[in-house]
Length: 82
Image (tube, rainbow, N blue to C red):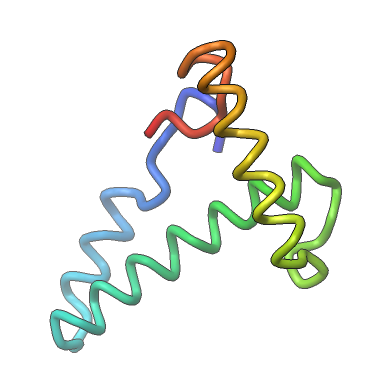
């Protein structure tokens, strides 16, 4: 995923979740999990750390850095555009 692609769940993935034999709550959690996995891959890549080795402290610090970039340099400077 590059900076231009801000979707953490592709239309194809979303359609696959829709077709799954899951309850609404399970579909929501599945979408959230796929999106979170993709976001963790981005964070791990930025920090040069394997996803399995990321700590909650590193994740929090990454989000703090993102928030500071948005405040100080604008939305275009940050990786997350939401």
